[in-house]
Length: 93
Image 1 (cartoon, rainbow, N blue to C red):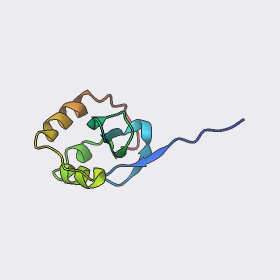
Image 2: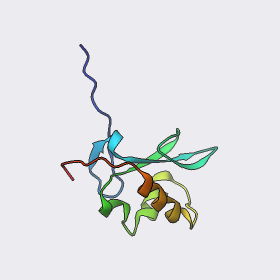
Image 3: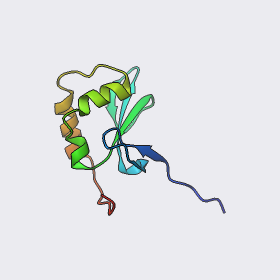
Image 4: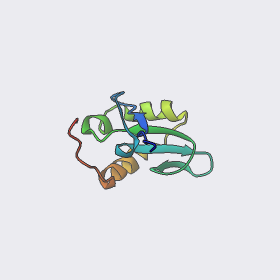
């Protein structure tokens, strides 16, 4: 029987690795622009820790990770997405 290992990704804010299912995925699609949780292209991941997604430098870190310029209203859209993102409690955090 083959065991499936979980896919691990690194949070761009705290630099810790987590299972991909527990992170918010932000993707730069070459046709659609910046999208959340879906799509193919350059991606960045942010963990569910309030410290990470409310970091004052998160916009700059995302711009660097996605290699793109983010619009000034991106933070408003990002905060709405964070509030609607379904968080599951994790004992490690």
